[in-house]
Amino acid sequence: MRKFDTKVQHLKYKVLREVARQAWNDTLLENVLDIPKTIVPGKTPTMRCCVYKERAILSERVKIAMGGDANNPNIIEVIDIACDECPAAGYEVTDSCRGCLAHRCEDVCRKGAISFDHNHVAHIDKTKCVECGQCSKVCPYSAIVNRKRPCQIACKVKAISINDDNAAAIDNDKCIQCGACVYQCPFGAIMDKSFILNVIDMIKKSDNNQKYKVYAVVAPSISSQFTYAKLGQVISGLKELGFFTVVEAALGADMVAQAESKELAEKGFLTSSCCPAFVRYIKTAFPDMEQYVSHNLSPMATLAKYLKSTDDKAKVVFIGPCTAKKAEIQLESVKPYIDAVMTFEELQALFDSKDIDITTLGEDVLDNASYFGRIFARSGGLSDAVAQGLKEQDIDFDLKAVACDGIEACKMALLKKSKNVLDGNFIEGMACIGGCIGGAGCLTHGEKNKAEVDKYGREAYEKTIGDAVGMLK
Image (cartoon, rainbow, N blue to C red; front, side, top):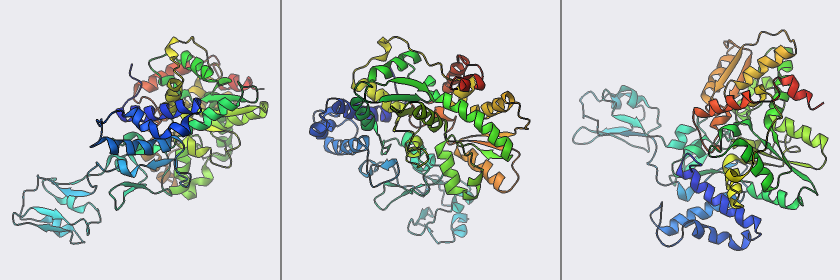
């Protein structure tokens, strides 16, 4: 029964599961130092050079699973001791260098970083190289390559550099906390902080939902996850964990689609506000464009705000694929409504920490949202929902949506708009490739996820946005 894409995810899950298990039993503080030994028993290392280093790294993973460095505002953290296996990044001369006479690489280098040995083979002085890449462009044999680390390749906002200790370093001023580096790091040296302990504490102190009620708000991308079980069994599993009830974030998406379509028609141009990584990217890289960001809260926050307005005993936990959501709830505009955020990875760990086999459970149902709210989970879904919102409300507006699939596409659309050459009046920004179904906190990633979300959307009981939102009145 395969639950994860990679062994790195599985390792992360094992740490989360053990931390959660101890927390349920009120034994975490007394047993926290033994968790690495539980995961790697004996004296034979499974992943590193020696068992002692392996356990030292696991100890750092445990710290992040328990909330990480409170002094670091970023929810993405680097485990320096685990980040030492990647080759030094930058331009390197490969064996393809033929020692030619032309020496174009030397001529084009303005920093004098290239020299030649007695065989006329080129060498790059890293202390002089500024990584402009000109030498690579002019080499007739393509012998000079840029060996970027996987985390640097994954980070499309260039927030990752390499420090003096040869470990990755994150520039918090550039980082949009999308988690792309977390998923792509082959050694799991970059992790997102977990607040799973907050969720457990909340459930335990709710006194079986008598003192207060803990709502689970689940992202629509859940339909493409937990592929080994049925969605209805996942919903039953959440209630088995102790949640009062489970509500679709897609209902919040319906609310947003209805409001955002009105706002778009009033203003004439808008960028979406649903993806927190995209919104943060605008603020950090295109501050002049911030005026165009929709004033609507994200579906997560919109729905949570509604729940708390109707139930003064409500506490809300959002469960989804997104690491940036953990940062979003730190915003003053969102903080009052969401009490904690978990990823699907963390939910799996929570199930197993209580030995809940969801495949043995009966099927509960989710029937809160419309088709259009549910397809927010994939790229293009928000644009379709806004078009439907305009139609249902009889708003005469010629929608020209630009659905951006990934942060590079977002960058291109924003650049065009900043230069007044964008053929569009609504930018749907999704930082992750594929949309939320490609989020770093997903159990699985892939094209099949889009088909699953669309299938889930077609199963919606409420067929229009108006029908879904109308239930709330």
